[in-house]
View 1 (tube, rainbow, N blue to C red):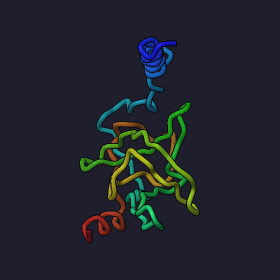
View 2: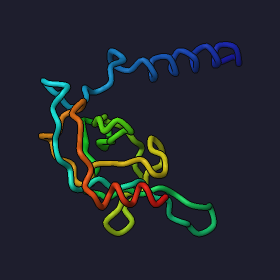
View 3: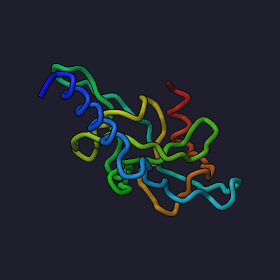
Length: 138
């Protein structure tokens, strides 16, 4: 097969690969019925960096914060406004009771420490005093 034909076949395969079956992402957990819903969450945990050997550092989150939705892996993130958002991540291996985050989160972002399917995207969370004090000390 000539190089030109090989490139065309390769481009067609890449297009099919990225198009997938319909090109749809899995649905996020159901949105809150009321955007003004406020829930109390004691276990907000900051994404933290850990110094690794050789290749530098990496980010970790508690394994209990991670959930699966089909082939996707996610966590619930509390933004600056206190609103819960689903964040799809690329998870690596387990390190103790934590999971290495390869992509999708930044150091210091707050995740719900223990995933609860009852928590809805769009709900507003109130942070515990300990989490608030930790944020202010940084």
